[in-house]
Length: 412
Ligand SMILES: Cc1cc2nc3c(=O)[nH]c(=O)nc-3n(C[C@H](O)[C@H](O)[C@H](O)COP(=O)(O)OP(=O)(O)OC[C@H]3O[C@@H](n4cnc5c(N)ncnc54)[C@H](O)[C@@H]3O)c2cc1C
Image (cartoon, rainbow, N blue to C red; front, side):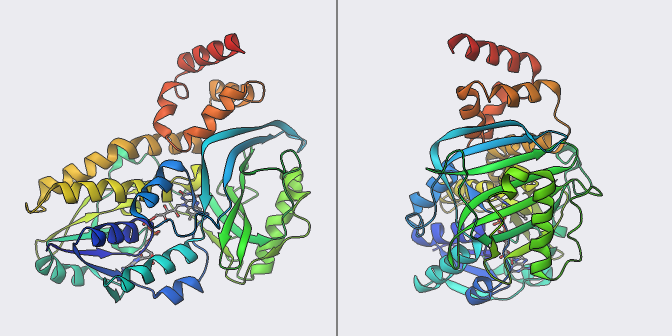
């Protein structure tokens, strides 16, 4: 059977490893951390995943936490006015629910499953020199190592990467004790709170190592008032800062957060990175080729909560390309075609995410405002998180946005 090496045990690497394994491929998975190290380590993401991405997991039968994780049925948007009141406030209903399972829980669990099913798990932080050797002994080497150092093997695609610098400073806190959303306590939703000129606060439920929790996630414009988490080492200081900023900029969210406490000492995360699209094929010094997966090749800012979704979609797309290829060689042309097939979906995520990082044009502000009066607009915006390709139809172009709003208003 064909031998495949996967380097990096995150959403994409593990999903691919389990998928290939179930189809009889001989898979080796290389991870720089053990399952226990991941489980007891720092939080890595907010990992909210929408219907299509979750369905890929169901298709492989690896949706192990689906019944335990909160079902996120809506996606709300609030816009803060200069006096910190809520100028806009609505919730769109999702056609299929979203879920967030702490990557510490999911990746550790999936890794153990992979090993229990007979997969070869190697705990080792791979270097380029290792890959040089392995590219000669495996039929295919996939690099799914996220935004780590191995990305240096894949050249930046400047034509698809409009930003050279990070566009947001990220600060995450996992908490217990958050009160329900007073407007709709009957169902779970992600809340996107936009603070113009300052940044965004995302609040969402998750399943973490200690059960149900909520995540408070600030995205701050670099150099602005939210860009204050760098260098904060003490988790309780991180939480205090998070809450102070909530009280100042999003008092409606602060009102339900006065009793929160961190889920655990590793329940905070701060950082930043530049959104980058890379050339998908890495050339090794010895002449071998490797194919980049998910964040290695397309890393978007988490402002639209798409990276894990994209990692799942990339893994599903690559799995199909690999299995459909049968016994033919995984050569350069196949690698490029495999990435191009994924890019058909990924390009919409990148376009929309990069648009959301900029200052919104007037027609987008109109759309977001109108969603407060027109429920179908709110619903369509919310479901765009599942399928960002739909934004082509009504979001970017002022004329299309105007025509869409007129059509909905007529039917209202
Ligand atoms: C703050 C924040 C919030 C986010 N929120 C969301 C969200 O709500 N929804 C969403 O869809 N996405 C979100 N994302 C993005 C999402 O987490 C990532 O895009 C996704 O995890 C990428 O998956 P991946 O498989 O490409 O890589 P990763 O999940 O990053 O996995 C890569 C793995 O490779 C390992 N590795 C690295 N180097 C090596 C090496 N040399 N050898 C061996 N192993 C190595 C790493 O330790 C890691 O385990 C968020 C990201 C951040 C930072």
